[in-house]
Length: 117
Image (cartoon, rainbow, N blue to C red):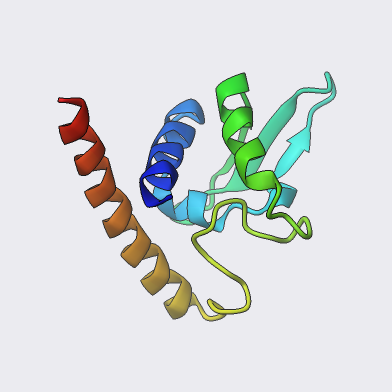
């Protein structure tokens, strides 16, 4: 399950123009919207710069989101199982959790890379 999450986070970032890990960790389902043409878009504000981003989601990115959709209870839920609003309430708790998971994901990506040669 951890290797699959690492793969999904890497590919989702790639499909979404290189969205960084901290911003992925903070994504909520309410950040996934539909544009005027009925196409799904990812809308978010980058934490580091405050810049606004709106990215049309391509089918492989949508497929990754569908994998995590079953766990969604509300639009305020996090998209990926990194941060949990009940456990990570303060900015420090969110930062520490994100850093810990980012380290695990990076290690898991190395494992995947070695397995693939």
